Length: 545
Image (spheres, rainbow, N blue to C red):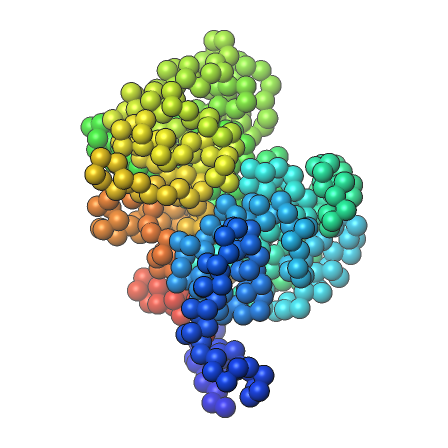
């Protein structure tokens, strides 16, 4: 056996480590006489494509990842456009809903309220403590747009981490999916004999805060090099945990920060095209959010950066954003409201409530309409046509997941704007031809952002994930379009380039962490951008088949 040693730098000292080895071949007699990796790649892909039901494809890929992770990720990287909708949205939504029914084998860590007081000992049961670098943590209380799924939400942690491996080259054995079980308020799961979570309703905030304080302390002790991504917590808790822990531990919330970053990136490119068509400056854009939950407000906070980058003050940036919730336009004189909505609540309107979206469009006259409501068909033909009447190239982003909860389809947006729409959605839609021209829908998928953001934070050994690091990931994505992609008005790069994009974003995030003074990898500070990018690539894991 040949052992290859590769040099690396640690605290200014060059050291050697063993290079990754390919998985061992089965001993003679334990495999067919002719088992060729290239042919087996074709075989596995054919097996996947022979299944007609999306959930069956998901189950097959889950088994393949468990049995042969190198093969799974090789196929994934070679077929990103085909694999992403299966291992992430929209199919992962159905997989989560049926998680207790399709469960095959242990995957990830389940930590329940019953473990309070002994969380540290539970975490230490993880088999690869020293290698853990990234955890996706959910409590299943607001999975996609599907509501409270309890421990069935584990599927979202598993799916996100698969994308960390595929998109940023995080080593598979460095990922830790975690689901916290505080109970569930969904009665059908409490009544389901197959449901694998606690059969109780969700606990109150006081007990939950005590649990989360213990959990965060113990996980940082058990996994000292771990970056944490919070995922799909209910709106109030999403903001609560982010504000409570972000200055103490390296973490971010993908729903609030990741969604905001990916939308900001697409909006930057869309706004330039829209302004070019209207002849109006970038500072003239007016953004209307339909949906004011954690994702909606998180995106709105991030999009303020678009205006401040154009030279506007924070106050001026805030005045260019409007929110709509279930009661209509959000404004101060309307009365009491959730704390997270108050920042964008309008102070310049004191008339009667405006509830109809068409009336709100007439009042606000937005250049951009963003949907984060999980209300299917909320952007009906009348709404889309109203946006087209207001703007030569309207910006319409129906961002709700999964696809059946999207506010409108790409086809409807194209038809009712005569092909002029600048479109990005949360879930994938097919491209379409319109009047002899092929049009491509953008997908404002967080997977463009969080793999590179996570990799950059890990390599920088950041003590916290700052707003400037998140913004750097967004700007890095916006700048990653090729001339060919810009020539067909794409708002996001092609998903097939996800590794290239992830490396570039990671480099930008590392630089932002250095500028913020939160990095703990001093060796990286003296590197040129070219050297740093090469370093990032050298740290990305690739399947060895």
